[in-house]
Length: 266
Image 1 (cartoon, rainbow, N blue to C red):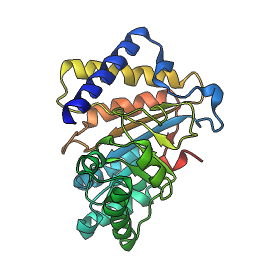
Image 2 (spheres, helix red, strand yellow):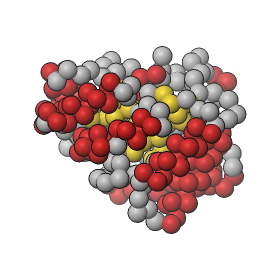
Image 3 (cartoon, rainbow, N blue to C red):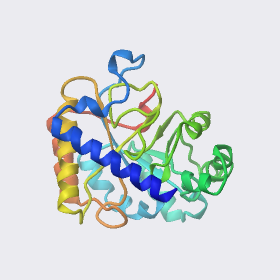
């Protein structure tokens, strides 16, 4: 099972690389904009994941505010959060950011399937208890991001009974809108990783290429771009302030608005 998934990931990356060479960005979209009932608003959605990064999000709250950035923060392990972390989340919410849900304990949906469980089991164990923990701490969520981006249409259909929009990653395209979304009909979106510190030269080139192409593509019409990160400066998948400054300046120069995940799929 693990080998099969690794092969699928490699194939996806090869296809993406080929698409980048052709310069045809529309190949990223699974759903034709001609068939949209609900066209994308146009703008940029930036999200950050995982409760372990809350202290760094709080430390750089002023940096985000200085660039007038509005982001979505996907939080897991609500039952284990300290008051200091909850205070940071409250402050971020007051700044206009969205606080969203990222599972009870960062449960991987594919691991549930490997253990012989199903989508309903995942909802019962990885969603409902964490939502209750979240609400007990004074928060509620309309957006959900899959841990590691692992999802399928079975779990999507169940989770759309609890959330307005879902976010995956580039690892699985079936039944989801592109990270360069021209449509919002499915209410399930992919996202593209923000460039992180310590990337290999080939990975950096690949991500820079697609990030720049996506931003250029957004000028052609109503296209919503979705990017995801984790830590800021430190932590897993950390993004440097230098790169974020460059990235935010690119967005500002294009005049693209910042959107929250909850702005999508309406």
